[in-house]
Length: 345
Image (tube, rainbow, N blue to C red):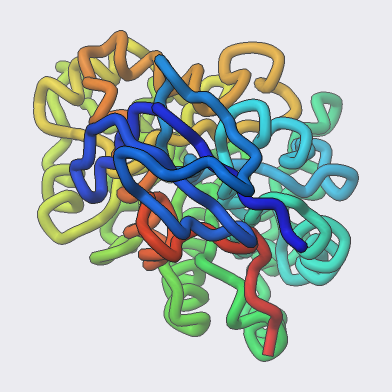
């Protein structure tokens, strides 16, 4: 007989439904079966949440979870339960060459839900994070192997949620004009969103943005890098960024190790560049430094003037909507269930 859990007397705060009230939450077989001001505790294991928040499981839109397979990878099962993050979106740790191993050895075995984006580069981020070698995954543009991505789609198409491109000098060198159209084609082949990382040019952000269409994602939106910043030399929001927002491109924080600046964030937010998702870009080189976990990044946005409800929305239902996963980031009857990803067809 499965254990029944009752969370009593907590302040339920769910931005998707705008509920903000003291309520009991009953859970059975991993699903919510009761939401009411008072639920009889008989037969339940009770958690007294008096004075605490009860919120949807957090969704981190930008992580690197292929531990043991890439130098940047961290173990989601060790970090997620301590930080309230129940869904990790792995942002292109794996390419076509390494995706199968990631799926079978990490995603399928994880207690948490890991939703993968596949890297345009055949080798993914296997070598990224090696501080003694500075050779990007697309320094040779031939690693953008669309035939291999077609093969991956045939086996894992139900699992892959997007295509990732790191459009910055350290990842693709001078190959931006070649790999940008290939990234667009790859996302169209897989019929998934394209997420593009911007950093130090080349390519410049104005060259990158035209390849993103409605529903695609720009990450590292508050980075201070030369040529990759959303602000121009006068600290004005670039017209290309305004145009991208207007056509429905989604904006992701992707804090990272060197991809977030309070100064850039404040100036950009004041000019209308608001995030659609607050995310960490958590990896092995920032987990013990500037990132730590998603709640720490959320706190930075509260320091920038965001309300608790805003930061919760941007880490629950808003990223879930970007992923087209209405089952995530909400507290509702029948919600919850297994964190497992769908099995490939």
